[in-house]
Image (tube, rainbow, N blue to C red):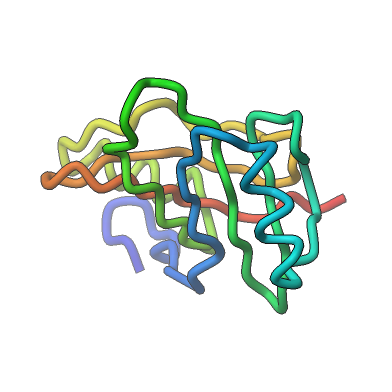
Length: 127
């Protein structure tokens, strides 16, 4: 319980996805599909593609900034995205942007850890 607000602390619930950078989505998507990854969102001509398996996802994001030196992103599902965002702000941390609703059906925000690893805190949107 949060002593200042009286509300329950937001909980870390599960690892949702790993997002990997690619220079060539048209080459990467068929590679993962050939291995049996079922595509849920995006495709060879898109900037973002998501493959769903079980309760997890492998995502690909187009990165055209030169040699790939961005390793990707860890996506963590939480009980309350806005609550974790407020907790980060209260601790003096600087998320990249406020929580927002994504077209792929999640509410999320990103933050970079002290070593440059990107974390995304997310929750599926109820439809």
